[in-house]
Amino acid sequence: MQFFRRVITVLSIAVAAAAVLRVKGKTEQATRRGGWRPMNPPRE
Image 1 (spheres, rainbow, N blue to C red):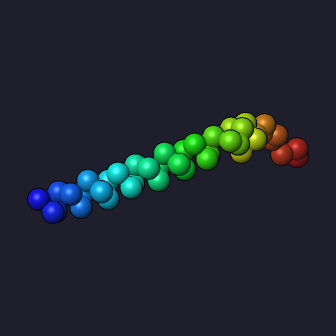
Image 2: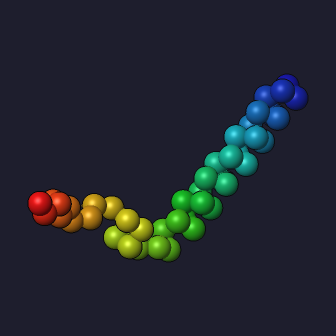
């Protein structure tokens, strides 16, 4: 029983940490983080 309680505790902490990181990452606009840049072929 104690093993299951420990597993549930660890999983809940992991879910909470993932939710915090996900919310914290949404403050930045996705278009400013990178993405595709226009490709200019080299001129020869």
